[in-house]
Length: 614
Image (tube, rainbow, N blue to C red; front, side):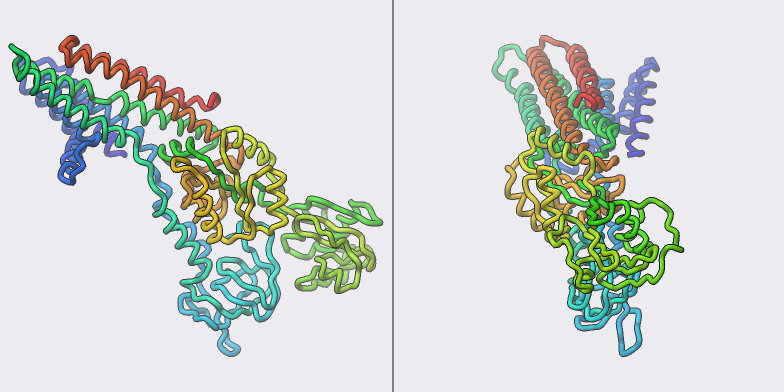
């Protein structure tokens, strides 16, 4: 891009010099124009020649080359250089919208484990995960990444699965449970038997999914390339017929006169209004989107967004805040404040996410002198004396172990049951919180004629179903791993029309494969993982789901402006071409009309920057 900019600057300086320096030596003046032309248009002509050798004749490079060289042949040197300069300026604007996101998925390497603790007798040996075999016994200590898929044979712990499922709530695992690579062991020591080699493990599959999904995703052709495929051969054929046919059939017509008209026709036919205004329209749309906190990584994605029919969401961190907070307090026999206080004190010595949520909700300083006899029961909960009262806080297993009747019709979320002096005192619901604008986002999308809204989540069925129902989503699929999400996405692709697009919105490492596979991948950039942001085509920098509808409106407005420019340019150009072919208008009149159309189209393009009226 820097090279193109420098070529434009240097060529412009030489071009201005050629216009200003008045000399009698014609060849010197011509040499300056040729120098300016070669500097700015040499690559375009070279590309045209290379494409012709490959059988790709009619593209915009060929059209620009033949039109500008034609201008030189009929002595209109300034026009030849000016048209090429305009073209390169348009291409420079377009280059800002080039997709840069898919070159690297380095961020995903954060979930790749560096080693595995393989047990040989009583000794633990650090081993490369690639060298561990099925059936080997591995030990995962607190804070370590789980290196391979396996089955727990000893130990209990809480496991952070957010790298795989995107869920903020840790999962409890024990003997007999499956262990997935890429997760982080939070507190206990786990011994597991390896069930899959590293090449087949979950973490490796995620990396492969991103790479493969990117290759499946078709790239939108640039409009000007598609346009030139039809426009260029038509213009060239008409120009050739204009040069050859009239002298043969019209009495008194000369080849020199009609060849001049044909070349003038080619110069006029140059679509500079299109090659400048179209990229500018999209550049304006991208600029308008960025003002609204929406980063669009390419004009092709902005174009595709306007054709979206299905929007698929991740849940945690996308529609919800991804923060584990106290949502409900149900007390029996004591006040809600007292229930929260006793529970927060009982859990105060733990760094478990549930404990942190309780302490955050309590929001007061903990006086450790009030606490005694703290006992943590792995996989169940905690017991402690608070102000002399025996407080037991944990899951339903703790209540069953203590033979205390509890509220069994559990609401959605993680439930902390509490007993005081062996009497059930109520329960506290801890769950993720839906973002303030999520419901509005779904309404806005439906108002924007989105046919289907879907949620894919790694969370449990009851949680996912409740969130989907509350927000008014059309479909929900729960308990999905990254590979499952890609499979569901493939199913959803069959439900859209041939021209329709599918957008996926996510924020975690686990979403990267789906973001890469979707027609348009949209990442929540404020709190989203680097891997998701890299894999996405559009990034919502403010983390607001409602901005998705805004982005769609901006894309629709941008396309309207681009189509206005196309229609206006083609109509005016058609009139001027007819007049030029008839010899009624002079070349400079035609040039003036063409430049005027370009200026009007460019001014219209800047409307795309005004995102408020999208």
